Image (cartoon, rainbow, N blue to C red; front, side, top):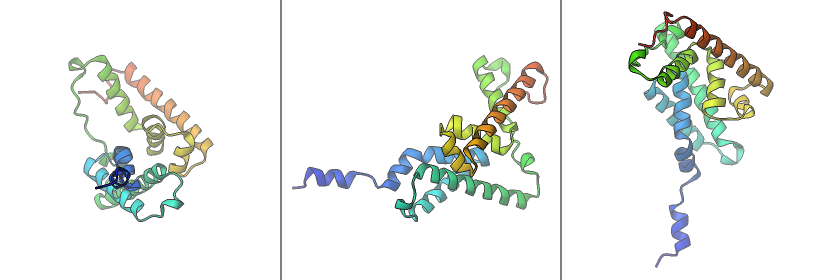
Length: 184
């Protein structure tokens, strides 16, 4: 007869399994935010978890921040490699067409969401990244600073300038309906 406590211990997931279950979506989203390619983002996340499995857990204070940092660095390396292979400008290479429906076919809320997504793509990588970490991943400025390899004050300044740039982009698009960034 099995002891209930032994069964509970045997059924509990390893720390790596728990991290995967809890953070996999965030890690893939981080890589996707940089690469804008789902398959590549999944490969990056897989590589980040493989690297975590090889690490001594005692040396890692914040495994989530560590995984996000590894995913960021791997994504940037992959982006540089793709850039070198193609010979194209990175911005041209990743300026994806927007397949969303025309404004006449969508609600006002969807239109605004699409404007924000498009405006985010116009931001420089560092500004996009800080917005993603602070507002989408809901990390603290200190955690974002560790992931991005910057000081906390720099993160505050970068967040401020990113929000200001985002506001300017959205203001321009709202005042110029015939802008080059049509939603259809």
